Length: 502
Image 1 (cartoon, rainbow, N blue to C red):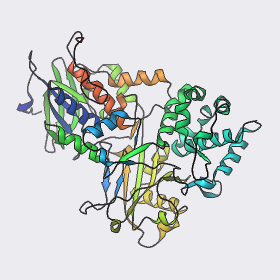
Image 2: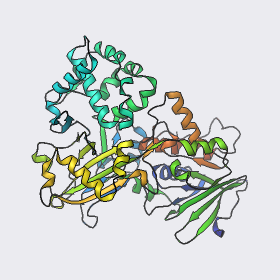
Image 3: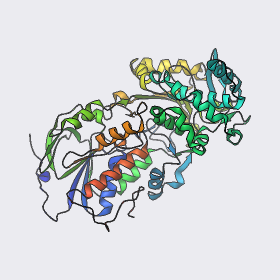
Image 4: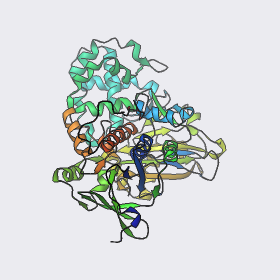
């Protein structure tokens, strides 16, 4: 194998560290930015694809047009509690782009699947309460407690994939309902008819409720509450503006089209086998930070890794996700009384989001017709390219027959993350694990191998979120900067969570 002469080097005492970052997703970009900012390292990034951002992927239907309609095929929202992410948005001068993200059931005019069809969110509570009461059988709960349980179940049904929905009884336990019964739920009612709940606020103000949900369901509950929170934001003009702003701040080279084909950990560094589009070359590196998903790593030769690390790489669970978006001639849902937010189809499409118009209205609007995860995403993936969009169109048309009008759908884009070459999955999932199991897996994923370090959402306490990618990057920067130092000096500068020197 040919060796690139420019990458034959060994670190000597007092020399600046040279760090090669594998992957130009948010974790890799943040780590490179922080390593350079601290002034101790020379950094380069190797990225296999032709763009930065990783699983932040913004699709513009008419990229040649100013104000093109766009769809977020990857990360699309940020909880306002994710302060690391918001701090970087501020640091990069993007605060003026922050806009509200309207989520599932946040619009009273949106739809929810019920037996026999679809009902408006504002009209469905009576039906949900009746069904929830029948599910409980004999009980003495008040109407508001039943309403709370019914909305929590409706949220979980819409978000959880089919293989997980059977275990929802662990969350909706009588212990939880008993605890809710003792709370004044009045302040948390919302909607035009005040017949919905801001579930995230209920749990935030009454943390003891989580203890009644079962330890193995805490991660799942957190994600449900975050995804249905009324305090979510997005970036106007596309979430990829965050990745591009970070890349623009990095001084070292960001080498696109450089695909990692193998990694060898050695005593004096790390050899990375890289295909540059023409041939595979060996880069002998001082220090390497790998941010590639473990699903990608497990498909390449790995040498010098211990067995425990290899076992973690082979067996960490990732769930697939699929998104299908339609470029529509017009935002027909507005005439149907829906301003924004999302509906639940109950069918193969699962969640349908009404995306905001940001550009020229004459260029049309975008409907994120389907967002699925887990087995639901796999079912769509198995259909193949042509059939997949057709099945989603048929499912969503049951709610919105306007989609079938001639010329309404101008274009379609699909993102099947389970089959994506650069990710082979959407994100790590720890929904079935208790807190101790989650931390054990996090530490195993983040544990270095010699001078090979790891970052990415799979190495964080917040998997599947941008926040987790940033958290892991900052942690890895600490490890790289203090590698080979026996004890960290008491007066050494530290990184704050948002990435600034303390």
